[in-house]
Image (cartoon, rainbow, N blue to C red; front, side):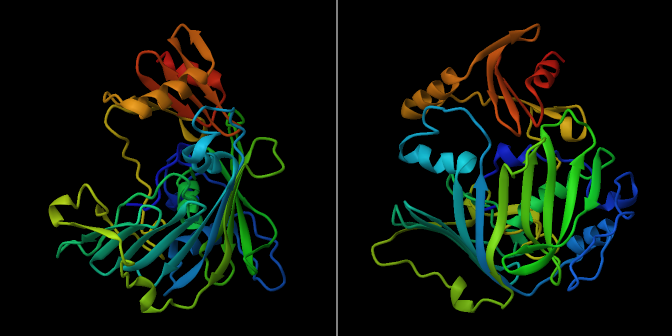
Length: 382
């Protein structure tokens, strides 16, 4: 479950591999000690990984800012228009969200944008999704016996991940293809933090490194930076701008629809279609993600992964359902703007950025990876 929509620009930057428990199984953790600030005790990379997995806080609130500059080309419907403006912020802009946490069953996230505010609130068995721009609210009740499950609704385009979700994706990449080191202490949201660095051993990856800032006292991720190869500035940054570890008041989770709001009641039969996930809540604050999302290795039906680690390529079939009307026209416009490519594997269209490449083939496949196009062509031929 995640109130955040999955984004290939980050989800596939950090390939899903062995979990962090492989500390002793090939990753270079445990031999390098952080040269911490005098206010922080020295910690090895292995110790920091354990800290992340065992972190527990009673509550916190803060402001999360996500910035990105993926170096994507100009695309119709992405770089212009009202709808495109929000999407453009994901690849070359900034997004801001507020988050409140007082336990796995009391979580609120508010996306702030020029077009309005979108909130997802869980308060016990009640889950609310409110959109101020549309003056609409949807109410879901988590059925008895499913209280341990997480709300699983999606916010609109332009939603930033929390540092926790980004860190989980990065940590899932730790396997023998990953070098794990530490640097000196960092300062995030005014707090002292250790810095853990994940770096692909395979130089064919477009990712240079991923840096995690870990709170020196509470041990939760405060920020994540993703760098393209040979870059000096992060292509993606997700970090707290401000954070307090005081437990938020109960009123933060008590939603009351503003006057004139159109309220939709969803019954338990709609749970699987709405914001209720069958995946249990994970350990640690917010589970394994913004409202408890845990990384999953289960790929959708019809998909496969070619290669290993940071240079793996996801191969999937495009949905058979055809978009209609304006959506179809927008999709065609975006696809048509991409350069045509061909090879022994067939023909298609190519999208390139600083951190990933995507290939849409004429036979209905999509290939995505944090690799150069040549790797995609190689995978397309298999």
